Every structure is written in structure tokens, then in C-alpha cells.
Amino acid sequence: MSAQGHAAAAAAAATAAPVLGVETWIREHGHELVPPIANKLVHRGALLSAMMVGGPNARQDFHCEPGPEFFLQLRGDMELVTVQHKRRTPVPIRQGYACVQVRCVVRLTLPPRVARYLLPPCVLHSPQRPNAGSVGLVLERVRNERELDSLTWFSDFATCDEVLFERYFVCRDLGKDLVAVVNEFNASEAKRTLRPAPGFRPANLHAMYAGHVPDPVHVDTFVDQAMVRLDTGRAARMFPRELGFNVVVLGKGAHAWESTDASQGEVWLYQWRGQCALAASSPSNSTMPLGLREHECCVVDGRGLRVEMDGPGSALLAVALSDVPKPPPSSL
Image (cartoon, rainbow, N blue to C red; front, top):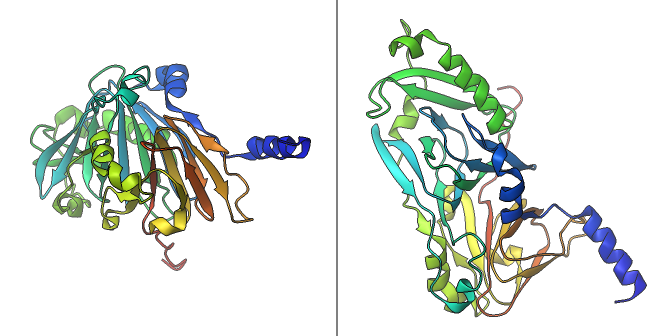
């Protein structure tokens, strides 16, 4: 490479979107994942926020938000307790298995392959992470200025029959904004007596009738089953776009992000196997990192995104919003 080429590459790297090495982050920051929420924001953009969440936790609140969530369980197991059709429905999300293939066996210094899960919007859910050292990554849509989250407690966490306490709030950083509401509940008469306040009527009943939540999917199994397709340069879709996120895996070859039928705006990329080079054909997108190695991830602007994947067997997990909501009229 010429001196001019080295200078250009150095300048591009200096302004590139930050790359998060999963193992390095857990090693350096895992101790910061402490109760009651055990949540650390690692990215907040115009459309997507990404958080690392750890265990153990002791939550009995149920969260509800206006957008979908994407779970990637990196270490240990968790259980996502949901309320569907007014019934308490636990959804186990376990750490995945290492693939019994040579290329995976030699990489067992990294975390075992992991399971991932997509949660539709407006479902009451309580993430249970009982094991110390468990870590997951969660993607959410950034709320607009008029959207509200809620936290709900039931008189009996084991049955979820009677709503005990409920609060709506503006959420900008989940790890910080939830704490104030949790502290309010802990100091409340409802917490002390396990009885709702006189005249209390929950406003969030619609969330108790939310539809079916899809089963978790093991990423390595999905990638292995799709490998013939991936090695011919075709993308493989994990979830229906109707769930709010466009979740695809890219394999061998060169890919234009627009050709994957993906959404506008930001894209979260996780290099699952092998490595890739990234480039942007759009002049407005000047912060693209040069590439990703295995178990590195980043959030980039998807406009003009070009991905050059490694050879056979490589896989890149890409997640973007399938429908970016428009802000409400200012008159509302």
C-alpha cells in the first residue's frame, strides 16, 4: 500500500464506528453489571441502542416498551418470564452449544455459540438471570420523544394474576432510568402490604393480551442448516420482518446491504464465524470500520453498506429495524 493509502486507512480507522470485541468487553467491564438491573449501555444511535446485561439479578418487575427487543445470550442461561394472553409464560433462553466441527473446536477459547431471541413489542416481560457470570446482549429501538415505557409488578410473581403497581416513564438509558422506578416501588406501601393502592387501576392491561411470542432459535444450528445457501452468496433470514427487526445472516462473497431486503438506517453487525471487510459506497457514510473479526460487533449506517465476507463457512449476523416508526404529530 502506498503512503497515501496508509494515511487514508489510518484516517478512516480514526473516525470509524467503534468495534466491540465481546470477550474483551466482558473481561474489562463485566464487573460493572450489578443489580438491580445489571445493565450497561454500549451503544446509542439514532435508531438502535445496544446493552450488555448480566447476572445474577433479582427482578420481579415486568417491562413493557413500544418497540421490539433482540436477545443474544452470550454466557450462561436466562429465563424471560412473559405475560401472554393473561397467562404467565416463561421462555428459557439458554447458552448455545459449540459446533462439533474442526473450525469451531479450535475456537473454543471464545464463548460457546449462543442462542438468540426476538421479542415483539408491547409484551410484558421480566428477564431472569439467576446465574453469576451470565451475560447477554440486547438490542432495542430508540424511542421517540413521545413514547413511554412501563414497569409493572404483580401481587404474586408466581401467578401474575393481580397488578400491584405500575409506572410509565421516559426511557433513554434502560440501566439508569429503570432504577428510579424500582426504587419508588421498593419504598411504596404497595410493596410493603402486597396490596394495590385504593382506587388503583392499571393502564397497561392491553399488554396482558399480547400475542404469541416466538420460540428462541439456536444460532449455530441455524447457520449450519443454512450453510449451503450462505456459501452460494445468498442471505438467510432468521425471523419474519413483521416482528419488527430484520434479522439475516450473510455468508461467503460480496453483499450490498440493500440487496438483502433490509431496512433503512442503522445496522448491527456481529461477526459470527470468520471475518469480513466493510465499505460504504455512499459519500454520506464516512464512519464505516474497516472490518470485523470473529466475535466482534458494531453498529453502522446501512446506507451504501458493502460487505466482503471471508471464504466458505463464514457467517455475519446483521440486525436492523424492519419498520422505522414516524414521530407523532407535534399536536399530540
